Length: 483
Image (tube, rainbow, N blue to C red; front, side, top):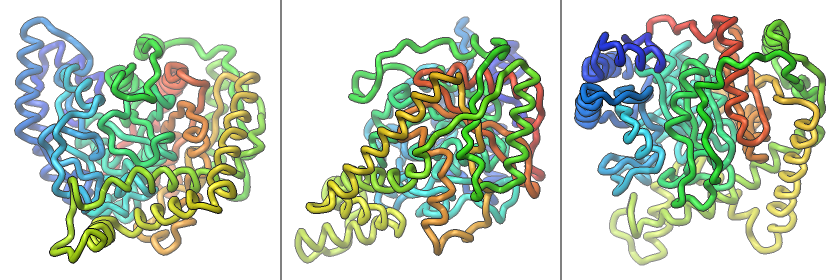
């Protein structure tokens, strides 16, 4: 049963081939057996999962149906789940049990999804390798000596190792798409505002967006259907109708205009990945797509702009973790200042402290105009580049990452080298656009992803293109050895 996709599980449950309870017990046993190698989970929720599975089976027995009714999933550990530890991968929140459910958690629970647990992640979603977690690094199931990508590496590793069919994740600068590329999955970052951020612990509020990680575009469509929609509790949520994503998967690609930015194929891109991307283009051309070269001239400025804006917002968002109201508190503080300093110094890891300091500096008097304001102007230029490009093409295609997954610890001493791995993904977050990564081949036995970007609220178009590509290729069906 562990090899079944979400879509296959939905059909199996509808045809009474197995029950949600049977499936849940099978996957929980599999997690107990295999996850010690991967470290992809922070918390398992066996009791809740079995309770939800039994409830889903009862709902089906009463005539209810639905693609997610009885389907097992997991949540990245920054989605608040009532009464369950929500740690954000940090010592700061190791003892925090959320008093409420995030909107995404509540929506998926209402649809009948079964929560198996909370997945490991980079601390406060800050990282591209899943090595900054307080609970230890996550391993890539394709090669246990390599990173699975971050910050949603736990969700990615768990799905890739067939511990469960799909999981929620979040993307601030590529944290859904990059792990998807590194673990041979399909991952979708929706348009900013498409999925509610209420109850999702914030890193950078103008960039964070929740989305699905799964093995196929079809499964991403199913999970996104359950996650998306307007939420009055989230001031950044956009009141836009949610289409039937599954119904749009089978549209023809005849005449689809695909733009390939020339800036993507610079010296920083592994030539073997470049070749796989060109092969993907040829595959889509066979399906009727028309390909043309385009330009995104301000892409070169995106990384410095992002690494000013994101830490600035992080320094503001993380100021609430002060040792007073909730989370970690130091032992025997001498006074209030000592309480603040030691609680934050002991509770936050090195990468989080680094980004808080960078952000506080960029927002400080005398530097705000020179750094933060300038970065926001560059952000607008990046968005304008995309708007101009989408006047000429329907989607933009390129590599998800410049290199395949690197070895654990290989970039630990050089944070900037890790930051540069986000070069192709962060522009979508700066502009608020939807982006998808799908499997496109292998380099040295490690998976490689191709990225698709589309205009606002065109997630359906991305899923359609990815689904048609997956009907004609088999990269996404490959399974890591031993799992």
